[in-house]
View 1 (spheres, rainbow, N blue to C red):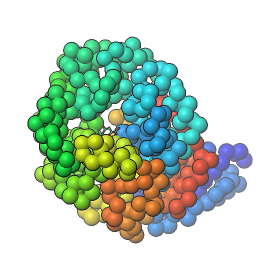
View 2 (cartoon, helix red, strand yellow; view 1 turned 180 degrees about the horizontal axis):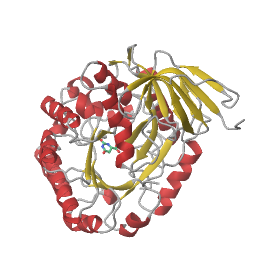
View 3 (cartoon, rainbow, N blue to C red; view 1 turned 90 degrees about the horizontal axis):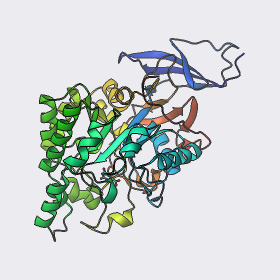
Length: 444
Ligand code: DOR
């Protein structure tokens, strides 16, 4: 009899890798899925440490969120790796890729190692970290390990992490071959427009200062450099119709792009309702942009979804524009938001799972994740697609304690989240003993 922990999920509606659903059982042994079948008999071989009746629920691969800001080290008053990973577990996010704008910045092997140690100590879900580009750290960008890629802030950053001149970008694109992910906004244009609109305190001006053209300029430059050096490029949180149109006409096979749920579902009308809570970079756009982004996602011009979870405290947000920081949390609501869209006919459940798990695993070459099939990691989420519940501030686990989607009635809420074969979240309760693993990148 195997000494490994076993879990048997019974009577689930299982999403298969071909996008079809199948009513049956899933056997998990240790960290792996070992069997998917109509009915798995509980023999002594399968010691069945635990059997879970999943009748009426839908089983999906765990969400892999490829862009989050979890604030540790240095900004733990907003969020930390423990609270953020609790929020992930509740939201069905079983793996995340985190950004380097912490304090200190993640720009060396030493700072990367520090984050990995902290995550091993306190993360309930699996983790990977970007290394941030500065004008000076080319050797680190080439050699630091393990990392999902290089993050370049072409705009919307201060100090060291801002890399906004072509002369500095060129060598980063020219040297090395790991993935480059860009925050594409044209800082020079933003600076100039800030001057033009100085004194305006209505947060809606944010979308005009950091306008569509600012995003388009930077995306064009990143694309040009990627083509010049045939360099693997990923465009983070693509937000405008113009960028989507550009990629529709000209997207090399080695380029990918992502969109956030908020750029699909919110627009500039949100400033009237939630003020600076709607402020993020790149900013919310128009209803027309929403529609074009959806079309680009349906057509595969945009490859996957990220939340850009960027928590700031309510106190910080209350400072008023332009002193309020940009960013909003997202890991707890992204899956139900998108599954609600699917239930309302805007896309299919299989598409949501592809955009939020399978396509991310493919793009970042994360082995054995993003599908429910024997041999793959047992990172799973069981969701309820029949009941609707509102997003409530008092139920949120993110340390910042708010969501731009408060009051939205959503379905597809996780009932259970499993990380590496262990139940980390079940019907409102966390198992804070569970720890995720460091993600690997590159086909194993
Ligand atoms: O709005 C944003 N806030 N966008 C980003 O890309 C960074 C983030 C943050 O770290 O607060």
